[in-house]
Amino acid sequence: MQSFDENSTALETDRPGKDAGNQLGRLLVDQGKIKEHDIERILKYARKKQLRFGEAATKLRLISRPDLEHAMATQFDYPYLEKGAGTFSRELVAAFEPFSQKGQALRILRAQLMLRWYSEGHRTLAIVGSDPGEGCSYIAANLAIVFSQLGQRTLLVDADLQNGRQHKLFGVNNDVGLSAVLVGRTSFESVVKPLVLLRDLSIVPAGAPPPNPGELLGRKELTDIIPELRQQYDVVIFDTPPVTANLGAEAVAGSCGSALVVLRKNRTRLSSAGALMQQMHGTGAEVLVIGSVMNKF
Image (cartoon, rainbow, N blue to C red; front, side, top):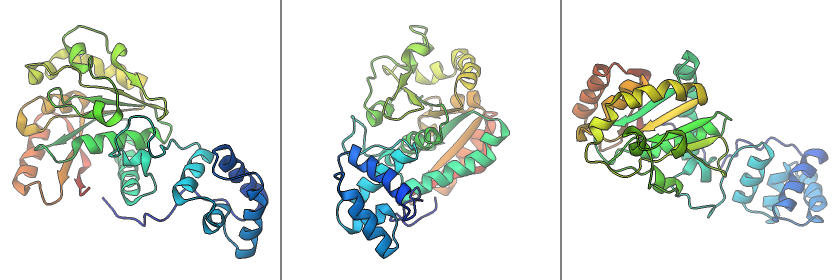
């Protein structure tokens, strides 16, 4: 992943013009960040110092940097979570800190996937790693968020049936999930959970841990679901268990047809990475041209 200046605000494009400032100012008033009479004061300061409206408001200490980022995200219809929103985990940096170094890096990864995967007509992607702790759940969750922020109808499926984490990251109920679908106890549609605060994103939790996750994920039920998901969603991302645990990651990658390999800086051994690539090729899944992502977070 690349590094960027986390103090930059990618969305702030309004200049010192009165109309742009008034628009942002009204948003800040609506959000309770400033008072109506503050708008003219900020505009005067912005014109005097040749600053954008938001920059002027922060210089005057009327709002904080997070206040500005949230207002700009609202102005540009960009899903964004304020600190303490819902029951979401702070690991969802793409939602809580979209303009940070990590958020910028995730958007760069999304851009690479748009060019080298999505543009080729692919819709389903398995996020795979060799061993526990390499960050597959983190990458899968945040990648799903950045795709949804583009307005893409995005579905995140937790296929780590033994140790699923997505329900914890997004604060949703995990009583019934993918495991129940694969044994025929319920329909897939019934376990999809739309996220109101993160528009265009829905998740399917892993559900109750079964004794035979590898066998369940290798069943034709999963393969049969995939074509329907490609019709219903623009992007479908599967979080998978560690490949070395033999809990079905290869089966999920094969069903998806595409896999993105996650390696962790100073953790993943080179031999493990090479073996993992070979295993992915053996499943029939297309390991993307970009191949892998180095997770240093």
